[in-house]
Image: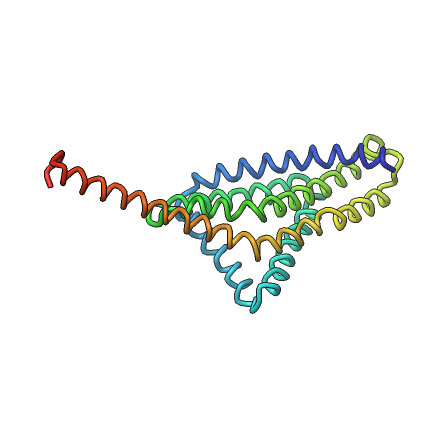
Length: 227
């Protein structure tokens, strides 16, 4: 059993790495799509998560709703991975959304210093778990497709149906727990991290501005510059 898991685990990790690369490419593309398209995507995202927030009267209910939303996405990726290339399109599209969001934060940071750093760092705590879960879901589905197509090349000792059951079982062993952790972190930790970074950045900017003003006053009083 260990040898079988080790062999198929290597395939799962390799395919998940491919999905991570496709996602990263989508992020880059998202930075350069037309502004009108960016605004449409942002509006759709805000509407979607606005609905989640509206149905969440407590933090724990919000965590449950976030988990359910992410679980649905993971299941969609898992199932659609059985259709060649479709899961790659989904992962690529999600990368574009993140790229658009990063571009928005970068633009906002000109008006509100610290927004970009706060947004990026605020995404990292839960994003690591959430994205890993999504990449694994795509990897499980894609590997199951490869098993259906090349039965004698991949896990030849396992019948197709048994391998599909094996895939679903590991989806619940790995992907679901990762999504639970991601939902909890996104609800209880990420907002606080983002708020801390935003406050720190704002205070740093204010202190820098004050220092410049004080230095200018000191130089003027010393007669170094007109004052």
